[in-house]
Image (tube, rainbow, N blue to C red; front, side, top):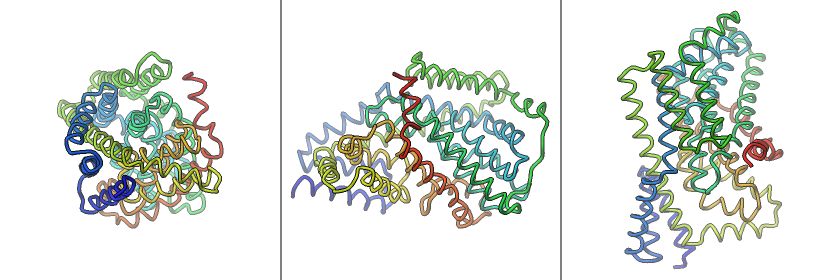
Amino acid sequence: MSSQLVGFVGILAFFALLALRMPIASAMALIGFVGFSYLTSPVVAFNMVAKEIFSTFSSYSLSVIAMFVWMGFLAYYSGIGSRLYVFANRMMGHYPGGLAIATQAACAVFGAICGSNTATAATMGAIALPEMKKYKYDDSLATASIAAGGVLGVLIPPSVIMIVYGMATEQSIGKLFMAGIIPGVLLMLLYMAAIYILAKRNPDLAPLGSRYSWKERLQSLHGGLGEVLFVFAISMGGLFAGWFTPTEAGAVGAAGVLGAALIWRSLSWEGFKRSLWDSTRTTAMIMFMVAGAIIFGRFMAISRVPFELANWAGSLPLPPVLVLIIVLFIYFILGCFIDALAMVLLTIPIFYPVVVTTLGYDPIWFGVIVVLVVAMGVITPPVGMNVYIIKGVAPEIPLEVIFKGVWPFLIAIIICIAIVIAFPQTATFLPSILLK
């Protein structure tokens, strides 16, 4: 059996294990080990697995994940998310669809502190959904707007998925963070436009909220929110200016959020312990997935499947942009069934050489495109992780009602992807001028 055939058999076996509900990290590690053993020897495979697991969990550069994850959980348990929503609601709640529009702004800012789509969706679901119910918002619009808003957490920096992409492709995390800012803001504005159009066409979907004075709006910045936003600016600004490494920026951000929470006494001892526990569990899960993906990637490399795919893509009588669209369509289909982080780790060894090496696209720009495409998977059936999170927050609302409402937001993501493809400068402009 040729090495390429072994590689394709390994990919099919991986999906079979997923269908049997084996954890993704375990499936990647097992298939990578077995395939590597077959193509080399069990002794060599054991050595490779031991080396990769140890190097992953002892990697200083990967400690950036722990720092930003902890910063997000500190913000969650100290109530930063609720104060963000209050501020956004007082600023925009009186416009058509204003509560849902305010939710997008709150999701964007909280995602900038948190870096996780699931945490953003869970936080905003618990905070914004009761408010929208109080104002008799349509269930489909209310739930779908929160599920889609969670996507902003993986695009606007810091982003755990961008960190993992940067580690997997050896690209600058700072540049990836910078590249996500304009597309992230663009997607937020497209979301807001979609909500405004829906509310204008059918006012019954989103009755108008209350109007607040500027004094009341500014008062909502009290309670540590203004300080946390300042800390975030220092953390990200220091990273972009070259004062901090990514890990140091995460540590500064986590320490700043913790300090603000302690000063305003908004974080209980139980919340502090839970933030440490959740951060440890989440970081361990991500690290294990990274290790499993590296092992699987070693198997893919020795099977030469990525290189054969790259040669095949390069030989297609199609313009590079059409090949790119085919790759993105595959990402979209996979995203309907596989978790976003796992999909990035699984597909990067296969598609990165095709898009960057063969087609010649910018790796930082491609990272933004990948994040946008995999983000669609968290709100599309049948997996739709963010949708299930909102279902957990509002168990009385049927899943089909939530999925019905995501289509305008999926269209917004597709428009955003098309704009970034047509105008690559939306992703490459800031890294090119600020991080030379």
